[in-house]
Image 1 (tube, rainbow, N blue to C red):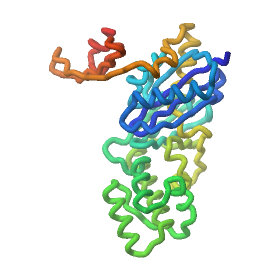
Image 2 (spheres, rainbow, N blue to C red):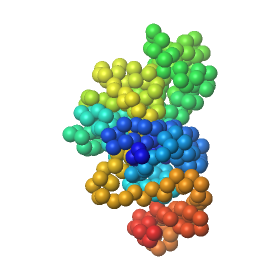
Image 3 (cartoon, one colour):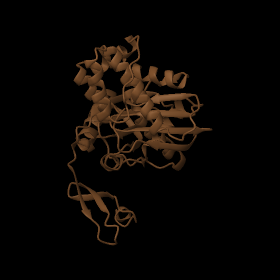
Length: 319
């Protein structure tokens, strides 16, 4: 029976579920819209995985992303890691000499600085969504260009047009103005790609020492216009790994593999029956101190199986 490690990356826009073997060959991957229902999206990912791979033996499971703790509780994860660690782990596996990672997803973006295969610095966007996948989705709808063709159209532009990319409001109003001036859609899209890359490097990458090799991943890496804009801005080649849109999930699976190997433990995986179990979440305010932490708890068939959100660990460690 084939032995696999599962990685799950739950974000606000998408839930990615992958399976790898011990040599990190990707055997299965799926991208599911989270649609505000992370429990359902994780269950759907497990169902697709089981239907696709058939008889398999799950050796370890890792979760990451903003919904990593919830996903970990649902599936019985062996490791639950933040996105920085997961993405860096996967990238180092595929591009061992990487020194700078650009990661742009649905609603957030991050930059990770690597030296000697170790994370030495990182940053994430904070309040502005300019440059993320959701903003590009919105602009593709407004311009009536399918998002799949967005990047290719940018490559057709012969003349660059400068678009203000400091925030989504300014970028959109500037794009509308340029349309009224008569610029083509291709020229405007190229200008938008250039603006978003400038905004990303000036904000997320501010103060960072950017060195090649550069790796670009996350869903937005599918946009060839953004890749070309990075290469124009930096004057260097940008590497896009084969599995660019599921790197976080791959990293989580690799971390689970390493954990199982190093500890010789058996996996906590609940099995594929987890997709048929009823899970509920709720929260309460802890009044144990002045922090008043919001504590989230996950209930499986009337039993609390996980809690988090407390700074002191009072509730987290009570399970």
